[in-house]
View 1: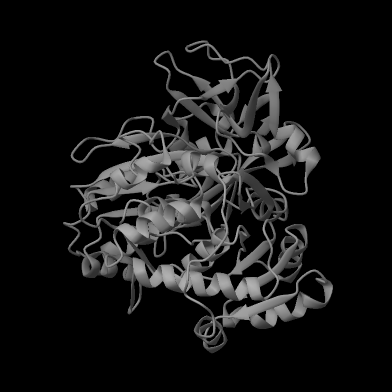
View 2: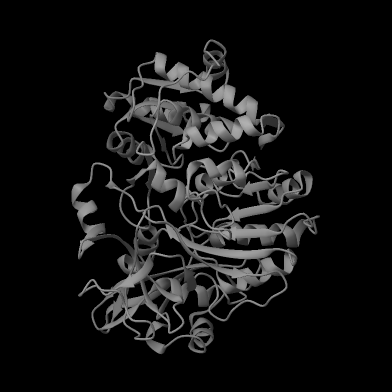
Length: 527
């Protein structure tokens, strides 16, 4: 009997399709058998270096097959891999290493000096293993055998998330709950429904391999969850090394005959559209689905994506590190974009609703009451090392445990959840609430706006003044506040329209594509 343990499930699938290609990165191709053996070798090396169950191992890595090896190796010995944002500066990096109680770390060579800078302040970090010659030597000297002890669905899965504000925090899941809520429960397309027992997972393994390309870093939940979901289905995961290269994405789609892509909102899609316009077209006839998650995808960009890949469905997902997948808005190939656009409205999965903030009761459909998106059922245990934050986010109502997201929403009469935006960045101007995401979506539809972030700046009269920080389209004559005001008034109420415009050369976003509202507020307040 197999448990809903991530290592157990992987081993069953890898034994079932040992000679199928599991992963591709650049010129490296690896079968399920080879990936399994290398993960075993790394697991033995970590055991030899004192790693124990429930201890945390940092993955300070960019995309590569080694990232998958490291995750699987940790699961095998009941250790916990911790995703490390490789764009963090020294102070942020030190905070994460310390908060996560890392006992060891696998490190990309180019990050070695940065780690060495903070290592003296990390007494709990016992070892680091550099990719390259040291890593390969460690694997060569270790056993490829699968001779580990029993595991459990209660083993931990932790994903660190930075969000839009504040320092990173670790979301702690039981592996069984993460398998269903985050990884799809052996249903990567979320169209069949999850399995009931672990033994049914083999029945979901595809007869022929589907080729999947996550255009997202594996340090991000969207990259991890989707890659694992297709590995458990016997698919081939194609990884792009290094930072985003939009042109290489299209070349890889063409070369590897990719069937599915996952992107991370506008921050990824806009460069893809730019590369297509500049260098395309490319052969994308193999693609039948493009998913977006982790950050909003605005309607105007969705339309352009549909035009580029007309035979593919565009699936706009909604969820978070604290909830897993909560719902989707699916645009079938050949259909027109819905007026709501992006993930401003989505069809919720079971156990997702909106709770009234005052009563903590589900909002009635069609009532127009604004509340917080919430999920019950398979949810995390809480945040690592953060009991107060856990108590704020994970609440119990009438004996039912809920996770409250930061997303404010209403429920339409048909049960659709209509998102308004993040409560933490909500702007209060003259007593009216303005959710930045709604205004940003309108701004980014303007032909002269390449990217935009909206923040509230202190104002003596209004309390906060709606301010747009805009990156103009390169080569355009620019954009004026008057032009944007006129453009916005046709789509949103007057109090939501920006009163101030700040133009910048480049909008700062996280590697996951999330807006950096702290940066935007500093920029807007300095003008």
